[in-house]
Image (tube, rainbow, N blue to C red; front, side):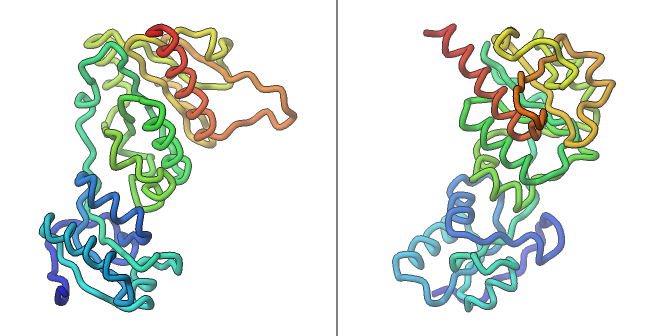
Length: 261
């Protein structure tokens, strides 16, 4: 059994309380992925012997402080009763450089988020992008929800797998990609006149998904090669950002699967 956890000087994602995540899957998969650093782990003292062995082995391998705690103590850390007896203290999320998303492949497909502010939308987009084989996600440094514990949870752990880059100037980065990799920029917007299945989504591609309220910034729309709109027949005439992104990721994957088949 491990003793009290040691203090760490590594920066954490937010205030002390807000950077703790709970949930067996979320904590263990983040540990196993080895991408997003977990600084400390707490496990319910009433956990099974098997769970204790698993957590002790993972934390020992990664040299992470580990200690047993009561269920109430874990609940106070994660602010959630559904913590499943385990909690992990997150460090800073490891964003990659924007150009590191340019994988050496002709199937390059990056999802660009134009200031998505809802963490659950962000997480759902990451989940669809990872499941459907997108290359990565690019976000702006300002005006964008950061990768936090809500994003981790709603992504079902996808943020531990798909690369997420960040830039201080989306327009400049995308213009550079147009020149450097001949990437086509396609905006998902209600102003579009082309349905996704009528638009070429093969080859190096960046799909831009807009803010939940104001959509895609005009400066980004101006540099896009195409604007697509998902056909709708219902009375609401509205899809949220996460659903729209999921549909577009599927269409990208479908077109590329058809071409390779």
